[in-house]
Image (cartoon, rainbow, N blue to C red; front, side, top):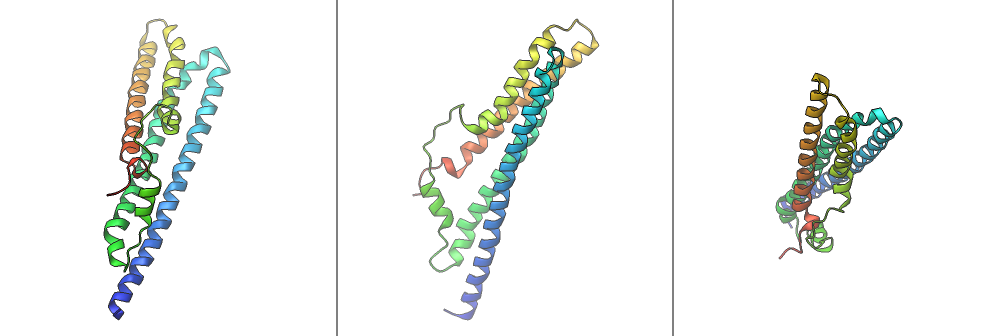
Amino acid sequence: MSEDTALGQESALAEFNALRAEIMGRQTNTQQLLSIQLTVSGAVFSLALSSPGRSAVLLILPLITFMLAGRHVAHSYACLSIATYIRSELSPRVEGGLGWEEWLRSHRAIPRRHHPFNPLFISFPGISILATLGSLPHLASLTPSLASSLYWLGWLAGAALTVLSARLVQKVRHDSFLWLGPTP
């Protein structure tokens, strides 16, 4: 092996280690985002349930959920991009290849089953659905006025954000290597 080849492999291995550390950091961030989502949701639901007139406060949850789901998805796609780069660009630069991302794809493959009981669907859009439904009794009791129109507009925005959150989670779960079968 020439000195240039050895240096190329050494730099590829150093880059691999840095990228794997970035993936681990991003995965830690996704777990923290999930924790924040559950904590905020619990606090807002507790506040809303503490008094019958406070159910309108639930309308903040679809917005918070959409923002947190968006960050979760962004981290997930970044991890997927890094994994693809490792597999397609770095692995060929190392004699014998790196193999880690290929191994993950082949050993963590889960059959393609999309069902609503996936934890991400429950944690993000599921909470938004509960919040929008939970705010309906308060909204239905409002007398027609500008304030009630604004509440209803907020409810419609919350319902739209709930749908967008579900689409975000559905797309990232569909595109994730965890849903792919073994590579050919």
